Image (tube, rainbow, N blue to C red; front, side, top):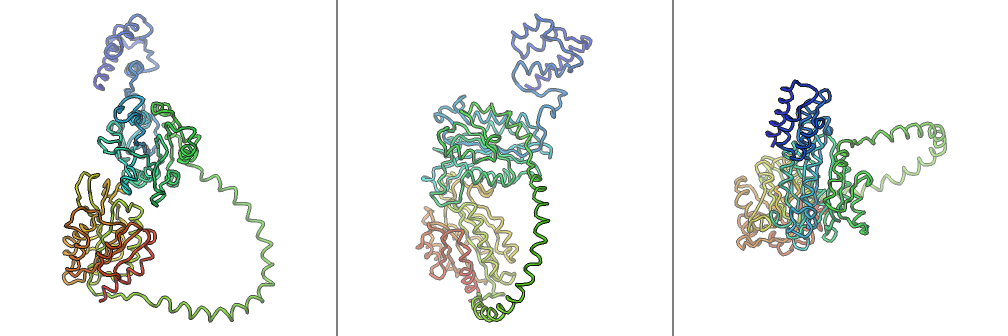
Length: 592
């Protein structure tokens, strides 16, 4: 232990001083402290040789020499008294994140080989991270390095689409400021296969993992300004994500890694067990980095990670982004002198008289009558007609964080056309989803109140609330549910019970529901048609917006109870096409 080592070193120094502080520590005294930690053989060797225990006084203090002896014989790194950390460690400031593959192939032979050397890739990665950290000066100040660690994998698309992503924060950047904290986090890292994480066959969703570290608040969004950022990806296989098959956002590792590099994050990749004959896998691996010769390391097995410890540490310490000034001086002088003298006199003489009379006569009358009637049918906007309007927004697994952004943009455009005001329309916003078996619950409703009705009286306030919306699934820094459900009926019931009653007495009430799928609640008490009928019985007008190909039209009809109140879009990116229709119909209801 540290206390024992300190006692040993102190005893060594004390004995040296008793002996006069000369140029030699008597061997009999040296053996008294070395035998406490070193092998008997070395102690015997020391006693039999007068030179093996000599300490040159001018070269090193006896306390430091004692620790160096212990360290060299024990093979264990210990902090040396009087030693300067800056001589031992890289003192460059950086925010470094390790993104670690935790898919099924990481542990060879499955769960039976967990914690077996040469078999358990998670164990070898833990050791690797600890060794890299030893070479970095950690701290929270702007002259030190911080460490973040995350693991990525995923569930089978066929079984769980679209709730397939799976990532875990092992230690946040803001917390990775000491060796003790990082070591504790790495020791606690668990393979995503079954056990603690309950994944029966974890996938390799590399692109989604990179996207996650760019968006999760514990990762790069909490990085310090003007400090070098570095992402170390450790993976043992090609991504097997099926985002293409399911017409999802492009999560190709190449695109996501480029997105990271575009944010001035230095990406380093360590590929383990990649078959040389698999050209597609090698190409994907190389696409993660800017310079494969300097930033890509290919290893045969996880046990070889120790070979690249020094290289990764050195890269983290030495890398500086400074390519900007190079192109500036070259292009500046060339274009200036030549184009100036020649083109000036030529166009002046001839073109002036001929073009002048031609365009004047014809174009003037033509455009005037055409555009005038087009913009005329603007929606009627009625102020001072108290209305409480709630947007009930689907935040289930099929939505994803990108589509939450599309929804927010769309609603901003709609709200901009509505008569907001303290004595006019108030806007409330609620996101809904649900928890089931992957979140250790049984058909449990979940919601987030993004904007209470009483606060939604200005465009500025509503836009701020929309900007702050976070998807209920993992990876967006919000609720972080593993598998958010689509509990639409429960969502309607919630706003009837909790939100509308907080509105104004006598105000008109409108509920706009946005969803991209059919309700999958098993609770018969909250069937969508039943809840929508309950809303209308309370004189609430319901408008339904269906998004994408998985919506169930009969369910939309049941929600709205009126064809004029049903709106459909092919996908989230096309929502803006509904802006005019939805805002016009909403204003029509307000003005009635």
